[in-house]
Image (cartoon, rainbow, N blue to C red; front, side):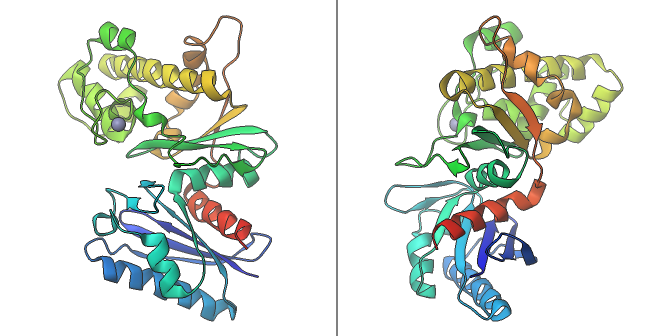
Length: 302
Ligand SMILES: [Zn+2]
């Protein structure tokens, strides 16, 4: 039986068809309809019908999407405004007359990397995406650690430690989630720009920051040190609760060598003397981890 992974992003929807061994057969991308919920559901139904036509069967379906899903099944997602507050899983399942699995996209990423990516062979794998936001998921023995309310892994909303805030005199920022001083406001892409601006007054993109780092610019180095302290302490907190064997990084920040290579000592600074940080690895499947993880959940549902 074929399985379909669908990864819904704020701008694109990626659909991938896999065989039952998770070999990729076909994948394609379309624009995400973000303004009209009925069009959004109809589009997803059509994608599944196209996949059915390709395989000649009614495949299993796993869907990944940014945001949270409440225990009642209500999706909360700022990236796809028309779908936020809607019961996507129930509505789509009814529209297709078959069950579907809907999961947060970073949890799909974590599962994909734990089963067949950079976390393969490890028992305890934390997958962390740092891009426009910061979120992740924890897997044990190749299974997503499922929880009742499904928000476990939201390390981006751990608060900034008081000592780091005081040391760098950082502003206390309000997060999109409504809480104050969540680390996401400092470590995700827009946060990098904010940190640099804090030290140098100038607002530049994360890409420009990397260029200035390579030129050894003092403010860029200062922002890097501060960044490593914040991410290091955040992952140290994560390690104190979950002690993952490996943290697999995805998203734009995972491509910055200066961060990835210096992260282990930055974590150990906030752990206990004599103990090692979890291993740090880059994701193997990159952008396609979302559809792979969603498909894995669809397979498990079969
Ligand atoms: Zn927050």
